[in-house]
Structure formats: structure tokens, C-alpha cells
Image (cartoon, rainbow, N blue to C red; front, side, top):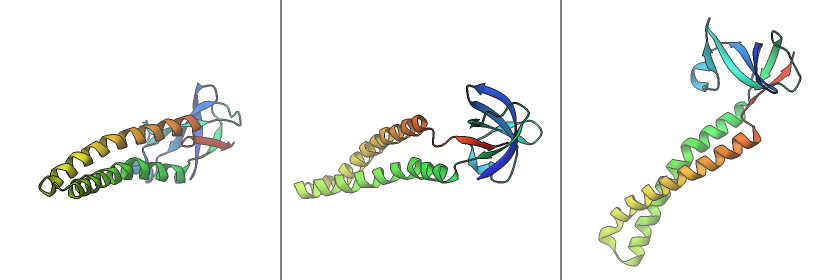
Length: 139
């Protein structure tokens, strides 16, 4: 998604804050922060060396944001169900059929806790590669 805005400040190095007009998509995104006068503040990588006051076009990585949201929300749910099914199956195979539901619940909670580490690992990789960051593409 591309938005147009004005560079309001340099945060550090080549990272700038771009003030963009608030749109309907802003309500559900969460990438920007609120500014006065119905504007949103977006941190963006400024590889083209635009200056404060320049009107710029900013590219927001929509595909990557949707992909990351899916991972953050779906991985824990998948781990939860997998843990339950695996725990119940293992106890059924062992012959402890009366404890299979308890085992399913315990395994599901363990797998849910493990999913936290998977999501944290993904978050670290995303921040390291900076593929979720908006970029200034033109002045």
C-alpha cells in the first residue's frame, strides 16, 4: 500500500517520521501512531535522503503485515490443537484411555507455551531483516 505524507522529523540515521492523513485502513492496522489534527505518524526507512518538510510517498508492506499477523495468531492455535491431539493419542496408545483427555489438556498447554517461543523467534527475524518497515520511495 502506498501513502503520501510529509516528513516531520528524523528519528535516527535513515529512519524518519512521516505524517500521513488518517484513513479508514488506519483503524485496523496499528503500524502508525496518532498525531494531532487527524494525522498518523509512521516510521519509515529513508534511503532516498528526503529532508524534513519534503512531501514523500511511503510504501507500507501490506503482504508482509498480513503474513506476520497470520503467524502471530494462527501458530498458537495450531500448536494448541496439535498438543491436545498428540497428548490424547499418546495416552490412548499407551493404554491409559481414562487419562487421555487430561493428557490432551496438559500437552495442549505445553504446546501453547512452546508456540510463544516460535512467535518470539519469528519476531526477532522480522526485526533483524526489517521487512515489516515502511519505506520512503519517492519525493
